[in-house]
Structures are given as C-alpha cells and as structure tokens.
Length: 410
Image (cartoon, rainbow, N blue to C red; front, side):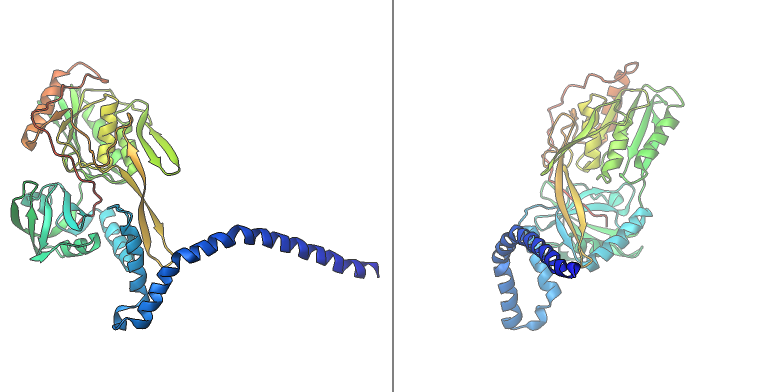
C-alpha cells in the first residue's frame, strides 16, 4: 500500500517542477512576443484592411502582398546588394547559375548592376558580343529594345538581355561624359574564359590575364605561373582589367601565389572582425605589375589591394569600382531566398575599398597606355625581387571615384 500512497506525491512534485520551468520560460519570451506583436500590429492591420476593402481583389493575392512587404523592408536598408528572391526567382537564378558554372550561356556577355533604379554596366566580359560592340564599364543602359530601364530590377534586366543565339538586342546607353549611343548587338553563346597567359617583350616578361573568379581560377593561374617559369623571366604582369570578381576563397588563394605571408584582407561584421592570411607563396617574387580599371571589382580588388599593400607589385591603370562588401544568402521556408550584406572588407593595411575603390600607383586614362607603361616599369626592375619600390604616383590624370556594385551576367 505504501507505493500507492507515495506515487501521487511524486507526480505532484514533478508537476510543480514543470510548472516552475514553464513559468521561467514564459517570463523570458512573453515580453518580447508582446513587444513584437505590438510593433508589427500595424502591418497585420494594413494587410487585413487591404484584403477586406481594396476595390480590386484580383490585385491582392497573399503572395504578392507578402513579397511587397519584404521588399519594402529591404529597400529601407538603403543597400544596393540586399534583395529578396521569390521561389520562382530562385528557380530561375539557379538555372542561370548552373549555365554559368558550365561556362556557357546565351546573351551579350557583360556584368550589370541596378543602382538607384538604373541599369549600370560593371564590365563587359572579354571577347563577347558586348565587348566587341564597344560596351564599356560605367555605361548606363537607359533603354533595352526601345523600352526604358528606369525602375528595372536585376532579374528583369537579365531576362531582357539574355536570349537565343542569333537574336538582336538594341541598347541605348549613356556614357560617363553624358553622351548617348545606340548599340545593336547580336546574342551569342557566352563561353566564360578563366585565365590566359603568354610571354611578351621577347619572352622576358610573363603576362597573365584573369577574367573571372570561379572555382578554377587560382588553380589555372598557378598552372600559368608554372608554365611561364620554365624559362627565366625578368618580371610578371597580372591583368585584372574588366574582371568583376567572384568567389572570395579564390581571391585568397590567388593572392597567396604572390604574397609570402601575412594578411590578404580584413573582414568586419557586426559580430567582430576576421583576418584572412596568405597560404604561402612558393614562387620567385619577381617584379610584378597589376593592371586595373573601372571594371576591376570585388575579388579582383582583394587581390590587387593585397599585392600592393605588401609591396609585392604596383598598380597601373584607372581607379577600380569599389565593391568592398560581402553578401550572405539565406534560404527561406517558402522556397525563396534573402541575400543581405553581412560584412565589409579592407585591405591588409586597413584601406576601405567600398565606394572608394583602389587608386593605382600610376594612373592612366587611356587603356592603350596601360600595358606599355607597366611593361616599361617591370623591365626597369629586371634583376630585382619584391618587396619592391613602388613607382611614383602619376597625378596628371585622376580617375573619378567608382560606384559600388553588385552584378549579374546577361
């Protein structure tokens, strides 16, 4: 009989403990819940009023209202990189990404960004229809096939610019100097080249051009270095012009090929800072010239900034775009995605890239002057190794500060 009498007391004790725990949990979460309910109650009230009273109910589907509310929150961030993708847009984006990973897709071949509701060219990709037609970094696309691009989104622009091979696209652009020009460009299958290399100046200088930063970039540059170094060289030229960037890890790997040790970049987020270091350079520190221009952005700026800060090479050309922030994507329960800016990066010496860009050691406005001037400096350093003395700044022609960008590839 004793166990029968004790069991209710034990159960009662367990119940008391559970109630105490539940009370503690309730005290922790009820206030924030009430606060959030009060904070967001106008949003729910507006939703209810629209669903009940708006005179055209066909314009009030829940999915559309939800997307509008999300986009409104993102717009208040005043950040050109943060955006929301609906489930359908995620599907289209993934299909486009898969085509780009395979290094082949139909379109014009340029990186674009929407800034303040206007469509901007970050850079034409090398040897593509846009490149051959004369599209330049910094061009504003004001019309596509006679339709204004004012208020266009990135996804809408990509859909308008991509299309079957052989079809015509008419673009009206406004140049940085305010002049306008019309281009008729035939779409083609875009094959993205990663790296090319050669020997120039009678074989005395190795030339490497990097077109993009994907999963193979650092490996391809290392192969180029190994091939070039089978013969004696006086120096190297790394061409990052019209390279809009790509994967952060590839930028770190590539920079490590030219930097013996130390920081490659510093990243600052709301939770703290982090420093990414060189993985160690296994190659001779030959005199190095890095070529940059308005189309040099993101991962390209990381590499150029790290090389210059460590005095492992000098920068020649024009000020870069100035894309110095990092985005993180988050999958949402409805199948959509949120892409938001979560950190900003700085060069090893703490130079801010965002909006500022990188100022070259030698500023040259004419593209035709960049390679000859860089080659002349490299040859003047023959027999030396880096860290090296940077060339004196050429202040006769100053490039304008660059806008900050995020890009797509139509």
